[in-house]
Every structure is written in structure tokens, then in C-alpha cells.
Amino acid sequence: MDRNDSLFASAQKVIPGGVNSPVRAYGSVGGTPRFLAEAKGAYVTDAAGREYVDLVATWGPALLGHAHPAVVEAAQRAAERGLSFGAPTEGEVQLASLISERVRAGGLSPVEEVRLVSTGTEATMTAIRLARGVTGRDLLVKFDGNYHGHSDGLLAAAGSGVATLALPGTAGVPASVAASTLVVPYGDLDAVREVFAARGGNIAAIIVEAAPANMGVIEPPEGFNAALADIAHAAGSLLIVDEVLTGFRVHPAGEWGRQVEAGHAYTPDIMTFGKVVGGGMPLAALGGSREVMEYLAPVGPVYQAGTLSGNPLSVAAGIATLELATPEVYAHLDRAADRVIADLTAALRAEGVAHSISRVGSLFGLAFMPEKPADYEQAKTQEAHRFTPFFHSMLDSGVNLPPSIYEAWFVTAAHDDAALSRIAEALPAAARAAAA
Ligand code: PMP
Image 1 (cartoon, protein in one colour):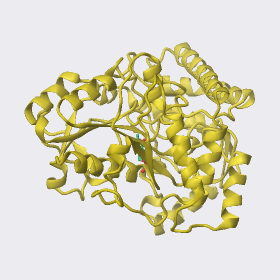
Image 2: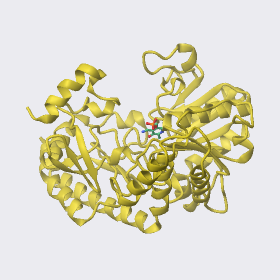
Image 3: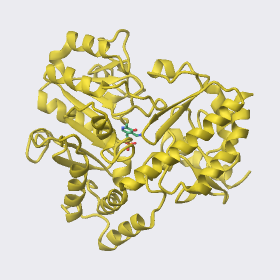
């Protein structure tokens, strides 16, 4: 019984399941979640004083590594001036401008105006309300296995046919709310066309992860998002591109920018950001054209608000992070991902473990199946049981992986040769454990 075990026992008495977000509970891998006491650079330290090389990066935000000194200093300086004002600040103007300037590619600038909120869930929830307000329509199309936070209408499960209204995906969501969502298989343009043929006149928006990374990583089919934009726009619907996870991580202009540079230009109507944009503090955003964004209150009729929106500490951390996220940082992330993927592949091959690694920029995910999964149904056919011994072997060797096979692995700018070598050294034993 170490300090993690005793803390977990205490936590379970005062916090449901001992955690404040379910995946932290090690539900799919079993065992005691590590209670973290410190996170610096590429490393985290648990409550028992054990250090791990980290590949969770607080689920994405720590692009520069944990507690980058310049980001911490920016937040500290902001804290000294006041923790929250509930009034507009200069920093918000600066961060909104930085986001707008970065999300440009191929002569397109889809983000003219930005609204800052506190979580990715709020960003996508607001984006959907905005799309409904703009179009005067109710229905939303989402993809099976895409995650956009936990607002009611987004926790919907597919109905019996593609054009069938969805069912609640969790207890507590009214059937009437889920019924405003249509869930289609990811990557299936025919299914999207079918849904639009049946109900196009009532569809406010399609929402899609810019690249899916919440069912493992799935590489988007070439031109998929651009085709969605065409289908949506032809029907007078909007396309919401969710970059909460991919934004400012896979490319300086997000996954949208990466796809535009690859020759698949399109214009999203609303984009959502989170994670990296707050540098590890609670902050998220939505952005779009001036025309669309000005449907939001106080200019337009779509209400949205937040006591802590644009919090000055979060804004300061976000600005510092984006300013430091230079092309060199992205090149480093790509090289770090190259190395982990090469070492992971070699270790699993040496043990004859069937696997695939899907990759989007520096973001990647492992699946215990020989082909890269194309959608959630395929991802669920993998030999997921292999992940439990693999995960625990890595943890025992001092590497902190996301505790689920359906989560992406995150490298940071702080993953230097020493950190990457520790991962490489841990992999052969983990591959043996996975093979057993
Ligand atoms: N969208 C995507 C693509 C996400 O990955 C997440 C969170 N992992 C969210 C939205 C929700 O963000 P938050 O957890 O900040 O509410």
C-alpha cells in the first residue's frame, strides 16, 4: 500500500470513483491511478515520489512540456494583477488576435472573430447553439466515436439506421434531446449524403473532429472534411470543425491548416479550440467568420456567457504558449513522434504482436490490430485486452501512458533524448507482456 493507494481509498469516499473525470480512474486497465504531485517538462511525479516519462501531457495541453517556465511566469504575473475581473481585458484581445492570425492557410482565414470560454465542452456546446441560431434548424449530424465533450446532445448513440434519430448515449440525457442528433459512421460520405437526402432541410450543422483522436487516432480519409463542407453548404447547413484536441498541436494552424496545406482546402463555418490554446489552464474558444460569430450575444440573438470566460491567468498562459509554439517546436514534436513510433513498432514486431499505429502530425495512437482502423466499429474489433499488461509494464518501467487503448499519445517539446530513451528502454518488456 503506497501513498497512491491510500489517497485513492480516501478519494473514493469523497469523490465519485475517486476522480473528477472518468478516464483517470484506470477503469479499463485496472489498478490504482497515480495521484500526481508534480509535472515538469517531460516528466510527472506521483504522490509516492515516483517519476515517470509522461505521454499524456495533461491530455494534450502541455505542448511545450509541463510547467514551461515562461508559461508559469506569465500566469504568475497575471495572478499578481488579479485572479478574475468579470470585465474585458487587454489579454483577451491579444489571444483572440493570435488565434485568428494563426488559423490561416492557403489564403483562407476562417476565424475572424473568437469567443473565449473555459472548457472544450462549452466551446462545442456553444458552437452548436450558434449553428442552430444561424440556420434556424434543429438537427445536428455527428460521427460515431467522435467526442466533443459531455453536453447532452453530443452524448448520443447511433439509432438503428443512419438517418434515424439518435438515442441517449448515457443515463441522464433525455430521449428528446438525443433525438436532435443524427449519428453516422466516421469516414462514410455516402451515409452523410443519405442523412442529408432524408433530412437536409432540418440539419443545422455537421460537427466533426478535425482528425478523430478519441477512439484511438483515426487518420481522416483524404479530403474528407472538405467533402463534408461541400455537403453541408449545399444544403444550407454549417460545418463545425472541432480542433479542441488537434488545434495548435498537429500543425501551427491546426489539423485544418495541415489539410489545407496538403491540398484539401475548405472553409469551416465554426471552429472550436481547447487544450493547447490555454497552455494547461482552463480555457477554450470558438471562432468563425464575423457574420456567423456576430449571431452571439451581445450583438446577436444567440445567448452565451461565462463568469470565468477569458480568465486572465488562462489567457496569459495561452498567449505565452502560442508565442512559444514556433515551427521549430512542431518540427521537434514530429521528430519525437517519429522516434517513439519507430521504437514501439520495433518492440511489438520483435514479439510478433499484430498492431497498427495511426498518426496525424505528431499525434498518434496504437491499435492491437494489423490494419489501421477507419472508424469506431473497426477500432472496437482490436485485441484491446493486450493493452492492460502493456500499459502496466510501461508504468512499472516509469512511463505514463494514457490509461486506455482508445486515447492518443502526446509528445511535448520537452521530450528530449533522455526522455525518449527511457521510453525506448521500457518498450521491449511491455511488448512481451502484450504478446503473452
Ligand atoms: N472536443 C474534443 C475533440 C476533445 O478531445 C475534447 C476533450 N478531450 C473535448 C471536445 C471536450 O473538452 P473538455 O474536456 O475541455 O470539455
